[in-house]
Image 1: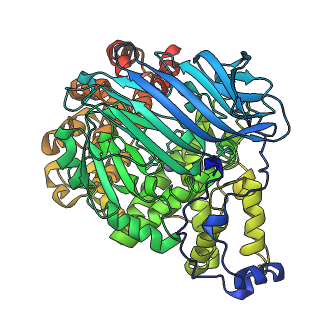
Image 2: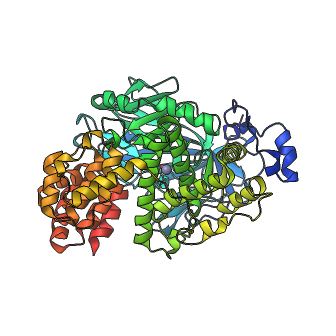
Length: 639
Ligand code: BES
Ligand code: ZN
């Protein structure tokens, strides 16, 4: 059997809920009564239509890759991966296989025809732009297999080769990849568009004593020879290919869930993520069966540029969410939710990114609400809404980048990673939920996921689907175009509200007005979120004595909770509160999470003497950052 035609997960489960019939157009009625659309039928045998993708040079409409066999060796002396990638091809009538590459040294290419004859093949690399080049393999119309032998660049954008000093235990090096959005091409020659789906298997060689993990079936023990084999037989887009290697141990969290971390961090990680299995069950109860088998978490070094990355079967997370009190685990709910929104139903291009992230934030908040209650979830929602308002103010309410559907042609898709996709996307779905009622909207979403499982989705197709399945008999039809194609926020949007935060506002005002002293604030009862709301609500300029008083009373400088520390350092920078600068320097040097690091450098750049100081810190810190963070900070400090 051609593994590329392997059908996805056979036990797709059944959809029990259907929309009430009055929501369905006549044409949809028979579907509702017919046997349900099984996930097993999701990978169509017919030819896929590939949307135009401005961020890939590949031409899958001519020849497409369906299955990948990787064989790579990780060389920790030279910081390179080398070996081969072999592809099963889908012939769509073209003669040339075009793969995205970035910085790869290609040694040789072979093709194998239907008779099993393997021969060297001509190839060239056509120069593209700073986001990648095109590896062209010609004369493949008779080929069943193509094979590329290559080596990655030591500074490959997707790879971070952490030294032992950059890890928690300081004993072993630690390699991790970050594929999203278009970095996979810097470690695998690939048709690097989210509209492509491939299955893969891999053999990875790492130094003895290290463990390798992928977004695939994973080991829980080290092998004696450093050779690991992986399989991912459900088709995934290339940005979800992931690899890590280091000194990992494993702790189970539940039947289908577990965590990998460096040995010295494992207990803390297992404590922090103890609710993961419950989150998985909660997610399934909302939107249907989890189809990926296991859900494990890998804790990365602090240089990981993101909070989390939803690599299938193995979410990658920053260690900065290990707060000791489980207060930042909404991030796990988020990455888990991507197992449906994103990994199962995938944005067709990066212009449709809100389909991945807006849905995921909505789903994440529903998981958090189901597990920890409405009041808790509303605190998170208010924080998200505050972020959104700040982002809208920063981008300007008329900025085209505040539309849900983006236009990222000619730009790095990274530019789309703003609160617009996440928080405006969330509010849009919440608005629909409020219009149609939670039960109907949940039924709609569950069906959306099962109907489009293992497929890509464009914004336009989603609107059509809304029209068919949710709006059919709704008069007037909700103006979704305003949300999706117009900048800013529609006037009537949901506004999250939290009583707990209202109390915090009252305390903040009392403190600012001199009615109570810093030490009288009842912080013993405050969660991380209440602290964040308190800090974010302080006026742009707060007097240094007041900051010193609250710092003295509650020890904000050097806080272990990364979110609170970050919020505090932003205030310290804006108000030139020097006693925090030593701890800030440590934070900037140790942590590489862009969400923290970039705004701090931006704030520092607003003042010439701070900027000079920031440049000095950066000189030391830059090596500790992943290329994603480093290139963002380069931009900030350039001017
Ligand atoms: N998929 C994203 C991370 C991402 C997006 C990487 C775009 C590269 C390009 C991930 O699911 C994510 O959204 N992470 C957030 C955390 C989340 C709780 C909002 C992050 O890293 O901050
Ligand atoms: Zn996400």
